[in-house]
Length: 224
Length: 220
Image 1 (cartoon, each protein chain N blue to C red):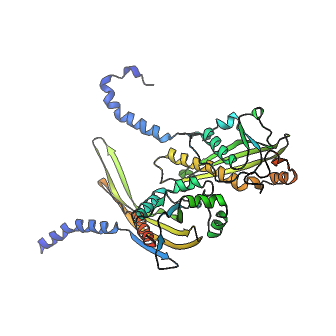
Image 2: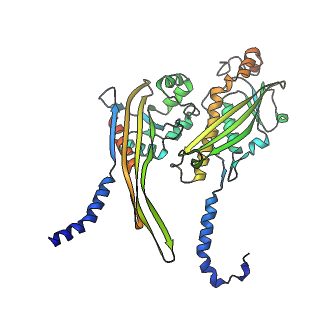
Image 3: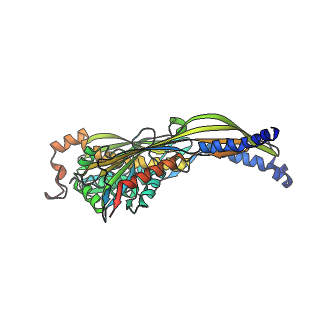
């Protein structure tokens, strides 16, 4: 009986680590709405642009996330225009103050011939709005670090949850209609264990949200 | 009082941790200095056939803001470039001078922009994950014969998320650029909606005297 108990004791630490590592996986949920099951066909010379919403008071859709989704979409052979290049070419009509919030405003904006011409000149067919952020929530535990003459270390345990919520809306710049809507929620817990050295076990919540969004948006489009 | 000359070279290694601590504490004061020389894009707009002169006085073109004791922002060059682009999209012809005496033509309007105030807010102050910058401009708008139509107050705003920038100064710089770009957006949305200007345009046909009847853009 005694050897079995010793063996069980030895297994406690690896099991504990396994449980922690299992907790480091993010849970991602994707919801989508599309008026048609058929993919949106992008023909030769047509391009899309991804822009982050910047009109919320307390956050901005961060550039790193937009770039990440953009890179995912480009792997499907879709030509993506750089968002900053587009905003400069059409300045000042897609600044936070002036960007159309809905299709009604987009239609009004594109009635201006010089704006319509600029969009056509760039070969832009679809505009994808990305809106959302990643927030840290529910921090628990504590970790303390101390340094003395010739000795130092951290002890304790901290845990925090992260939630990424992003929404994408696809606008057709020719028909001036919405072509689809996609929402990604990704959540997970990260840990910091202080056993002399601090050991971080981080859950890639935002990265998972980017993968989910990028892969799903890729399935919206097909290239000819 | 420490007598510096009494510190021997042998004791210098012992001063290492103290120096490191001092450096860390110096880093905590976190003073930020920004010199903006950003290029701004031209505006995509059809100007109205109204002649105007824009006066960028030296205190505007060399403007440096100090929104708090730790931050300075030299935004003069950047705002001059942005206003040049923005006004080029509002008036045709348009002339830019550094003093009213330098005006060459006979503009219908003379506009003198100035900065009234610059404010800044950091995440530790606003409890949001964003850096915010407000620039409050005043635009003195005069007719050719010196009548002041109005002094238009034009606040602009820019913010940038804390997480997307590598440093505090980069985040403040980005927020400031956004606030200056916002000036172009605000001008193109609202300039011709200023009540005093609308009334003047309605009562005075003179603004159009310097352009031909079939000038591009026409009178909207």
